[in-house]
Amino acid sequence: MHTHQLLAHPLFDERPLREIFEPFGFEVSIKLTEPPIDPACDDPADLDAYANDPQAYINGLAFEHPAGFTEVDRSENDEGDIYSVAVRAKTVFAQLLLCADSAFAGTNHNSSASYLAVYRERMRQLTVEGFSRERDDGYQQAELSRAAQSYCLIASLQLRFGELPDPSRYCDDNWPWARKWFKSSGPRRNLVKAGALILAEIERLDRAAERQGGE
Image (cartoon, rainbow, N blue to C red; front, side):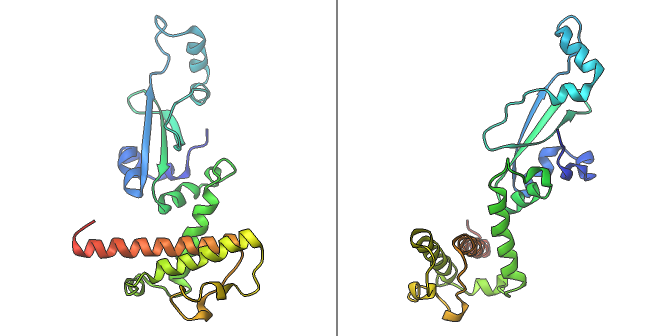
């Protein structure tokens, strides 16, 4: 199998996989099995296959990881065991790291494009639009979630009825800022904007809770 490019980092030679992956927002599943090296116990066909090409034998094994996990490496560890490690991203950042290797962001990972789109829009809001985290902290009247709701509303109307001649008029009562700042696009793009605004609101709540010493 293709090993995720993250594992080429020297850290993975120095510390256990779980200790590195988990702080980045991954759940980790590790499965171990012994290689076939005992003629008295192991299948002769497995003995021959492993002796002739250990990595090919390892690649042909079936490991059962929980649903939603993506295998990122399988090989042999220093103790001589065959292992398989799989991860599940719990955060947008972890999903971005997983998809940074193009082999893990293809057609078999249909969620990757949506995760990346929301993450990139959030980064665009911070770097291009100037919506800094400090500025977001000042929005304490649900402005961010109301803006997200407005984009969701327009997207739902577009999906139901098609193109709208003047989308902003449908959310005048809920949009928290000047009308000129409401920039409607197609339904998918509007949902991406909504997702990034929801992420911004969650981040704001988390920062506020951290300052107060709570959850």
